[in-house]
Image 1 (tube, rainbow, N blue to C red):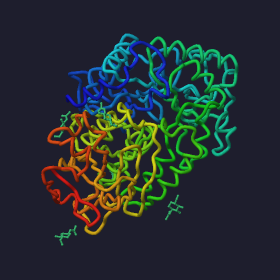
Image 2: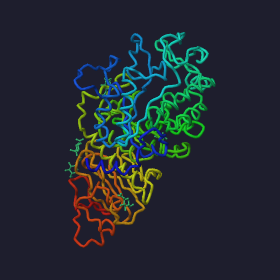
Image 3: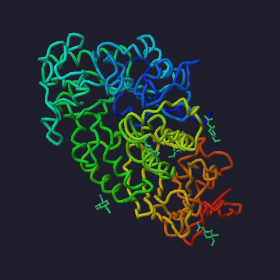
Image 4: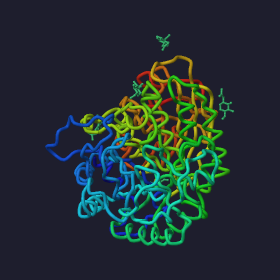
Amino acid sequence: MTRLLWTLAVLPLAIQNALAATAEQWRGRSIYQIITDRFALAEGADLNACDPGDKTYCGGTWNSIRENLDYIQDAGFTAIWISPVNQNYDGPATDYGDPYHGYWMKDVTKLNDRFGDENDLHALVEEVHKRKMYIMVDIVVNNVMATSTNPDYSDYLFKDAAYYHPYCGIEWGNTQSEQNCWMGDSKVPLPDVDTSNPDVVSVYTRWIKDFVATYSIDGLRIDAAKHVNKDFWPQFCGAAGVFCIGEVFGDAAVEPVAQWQGADALDSVLNFPMYSALVSAFQIPGPNNVSMISSVLEESKAKFTDLTVLGNFLENQDLPRWSNLSVDPQAMYNAMTWTFMSDGIPIVYAGQEQYFHGAGDPYNREPLWPSNYANTTARQLISELNVVRNFLVSNDSDVDWVTAPTVIKTESDVGIAFEKGPVITVLTTIGSPGRNATNIVVQTDYPSETLFFEVTSGGFGDGRCIQWVVGSEGHLEVEYTKGGRPRVFVLGTVLENSHICHEEVSWAIVHEGLKSAAAPIQASLVAGAVGLFAAWMSIQY
Ligand SMILES: *[C@@H]1O[C@H](CO)[C@@H](O)[C@H](O)[C@H]1NC(C)=O
Ligand SMILES: *[C@@H]1O[C@H](CO)[C@@H](O)[C@H](O)[C@H]1NC(C)=O
Ligand SMILES: *[C@@H]1O[C@H](CO)[C@@H](O)[C@H](O)[C@H]1NC(C)=O
Ligand SMILES: *[C@@H]1O[C@H](CO)[C@@H](O)[C@H](O)[C@H]1NC(C)=O
Ligand SMILES: *[C@@H]1O[C@H](CO)[C@@H](O)[C@H](O)[C@H]1NC(C)=O
């Protein structure tokens, strides 16, 4: 993996000890999301003993994550997000099983000994930092967990009922109720901590400051962020001093989510509105409503304070797996390419790359080990996207790619094309079967004969580093006789010295354009993947 190592080497140096990775520093990262219990087992453990339907511990630990970081880093990720690390309920199994997921808090100031001890957590962070990666930890402060609506709080961090809102069931859609009433239900109530109480604020802010410093945590993923009074977050995240990305669950509409990003709330949020749009556009079978993407994007530009730090995802521990929603893998490849090449931080939930296809909780929390950590087509595409994105992030000599805005160039019911900095991405909804006479034509602002490289092959192996040339009217045109894979084109000159497309390339030609080429250039049909049209040609050396 010379290429990958080189790419990582030019990223800004990760912080070795402590220190606050800011939104600015996270913007160029790419995140792999892990439920600690389900990612990996210690060597020699029984590999067959984990059925997600059992809703109990399967044995993953911070040590087993540390021992298997190669799998993540080799796919080009530059950060991990791990499930909560703090002490959970440890009583008899409930109707919803045991807290193997880590979200059933008892005392955030203690570690969860199911996943290791403080030395193990330190060792994990140290190894992550040694690899110049970041670690984000999932934090739950909105609530604790109990088995009755009138619990004995003597074992909890907050030992007096006065630190909690009195029990009430949530009336959804009523903000006051969503923030003060209890999540969960009568089987597993989640007592709502009163985060407007000054003593609570003081205990929580002192704790998070200490926690982040002690373990050198680079960022926080905030569970149930919208269930907390908004003005709590600047105090809490200010004390933490690191990037905070909040979960504002489920909303397809932009406004209710966007209001949680900003100086009066959080650095960032998970991009649920774009998730909904991507499902609507790419799911197969599905409505293929591509205009959802541009309408969410345009509204997002108006309402979010910074799109380029939003967390873009297709899956997480609460949603059905993408492959449960959509049977054609091309749908995932295209939607996933949006999450990497448009504005925002890409997040891949462990197992997505293995085509796991469980429905909702608990079936979407499959153990990863039965996959044998295979180098699937999905994983290869992810690796390619990470290599390209990491390069673009590191190379800001002309245009700062990561902050350049995403601009939609064209859209139709068969696909969408967009530009971000010197990169044009063409996505389609048509899926795997090839189609004749289905083309996407992108009107570019580049002069004719400008050279681009296609930088992903999507596992087909035959697309990568093929040169494309902008046609006489500034067109780039893609056709789909071999099926609808995603296409990412990077301006040729940008890739010089990138090691992404280096071999066999004449950089003089890339710089000077086709006209100056001394030797004749062979225009060819490339294995049927691209065609030859009046307005453009595809060129292969
Ligand atoms: C597709 O999405 C657009 C934009 O959100 C919306 O206006 C339109 O009604 C949707 N079309 C269908 C058929 O759902
Ligand atoms: C979705 O998940 C459910 C429950 O795990 C399963 O029965 C169904 O077969 C899955 N669908 C697909 C397409 O994988
Ligand atoms: C995965 O497969 C691709 C294509 O064969 C190969 O280039 C890449 O090195 C493999 N990655 C790993 C980690 O084995
Ligand atoms: C596309 O057209 C070619 C030539 O007519 C034909 O051989 C091929 O089967 C067609 N492919 C599809 C997917 O219709
Ligand atoms: C970055 O891009 C510029 C062109 O924008 C190019 O000249 C330079 O070689 C690139 N840097 C690296 C390290 O590839």
